[in-house]
Length: 253
Image 1 (cartoon, rainbow, N blue to C red):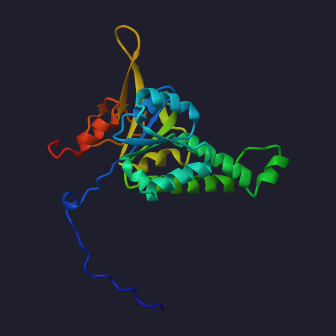
Image 2 (cartoon, rainbow, N blue to C red; image 1 turned 180 degrees about the vertical axis):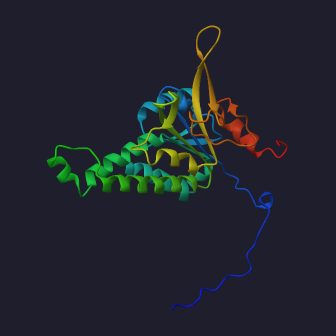
């Protein structure tokens, strides 16, 4: 029989309210294509945005020409940007790191896996070029998990934007909005890496034309995967700097 493990003494138990709070916030926002996620990413305090698709650059330039930008068209350059944000003194000039978008980062990861998969030849011979094997799916989830953990460990505010897609429950006919990633396994896990998770949506104006953009943090069970904050309203205006100010305000109950 092996030795009985020793019980460590001196365990420190604190009241949750007395534990030092991180000075940085971790936020993820999902939304359908065209909802305004890239514009939302320009409302962060003193931000640098890692752009996985160059199509986002004109929007950032228009809405916040002072925003820092890093182009990351492939997985290698994306990881270089994350490591730069973690280790570089140059990165300390920024207060917020924005990834636009996690969905495209997932596509980059998928392309890399299909190119390097040990099952690639067999899949191509079977006429399934570009598809993932079961082993590839495992690697996809593992690598995405590693990326999200690296992002939320950055020494700055982190905002991750992700495209969403609509789903319809066949029984209740409820239309839901879910993060857009490969397969189904990662989708419900995605908001769990962050302290705040919302859905950006466009609501048609009752009078006149146009829409009002708002971010949902609570409610609408079955429709959205969200996570709110006691210091924010269930539905907020799309301004991340205002959210962070509200969450940091000690006078905000």
